Image (tube, rainbow, N blue to C red):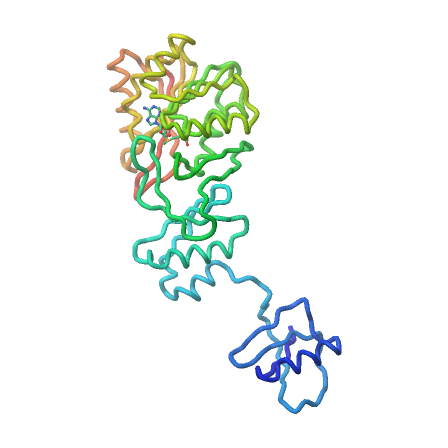
Length: 342
Ligand SMILES: C[S@@+](CC[C@H](N)C(=O)[O-])C[C@H]1O[C@@H](n2cnc3c(N)ncnc32)[C@H](O)[C@@H]1O
């Protein structure tokens, strides 16, 4: 690519000459090199000026936007090595994890991210881990709009949520589809700990159960579940209940009956709710139980927990299998155990 190079103070004179003679290549960008300006030209030409010009053939494409990595390296130098390259995108929001050692550069990293990623309007960094009963994560906006509500698409379903008010994990899409694909026609399904309803809605969009009940404690998550039910044009086949599963599930069993399938997506403390699930599942019904396990505990510890709870409530279980559905820490995994209650 041909450029004509001139010292700054004569750049305007040269530019006028190039323009009036149709020599300037307007499809390319003018570049700077210290005290020189490089004009993109269509071809070399002969002209006597009272200042010096030179022609250069450059392979550099000054039109190309610099990448995230290039800009990080330019602005942070060797500290760019500490920036994590994995991040989550939820609708128009990007969620970054920024290590302590480069925390002071958070805003700069956020700005660079925003500049180099189309469709992202807000960049946040995680602050701490998931907390409390509602399993909520704190965030700090480091670039872009101060708006934590967004809509994202997963498995053909649309979900609205505020990432600071409800639990969310955009990495569970494959797992939700795996469960949905097992649901048989006409089944009754109970989703405990249903959040903003990603599991119930995925199931109803991809399978044909007779009825899905969803129970969630966090009123904000329940509010978004109601919005998402409408957003996905779902009717009476989904009942959303805002409350504690320990209180609400026995009431459902009394008014509706037991369930063919129960989902338990609360991996941190789900074991203390197995009793509620065992009492609500039909004979030969299926339970999907999520739990966090260290690498060396997979799957034995999960089955031990399930068996010991089953014994307490005089149930026997038949293992279907286990699925590792995400790493959540160093050598720590989210595992789903699928089993039939005999
Ligand atoms: C790990 S999140 C999963 C949410 C949702 N299923 C998803 O995949 O995004 C667990 C959810 O369980 C809810 N929760 C915790 N304890 C509960 C209880 N006793 N009864 C009902 N929901 C509960 C929390 O508020 C949280 O939304």
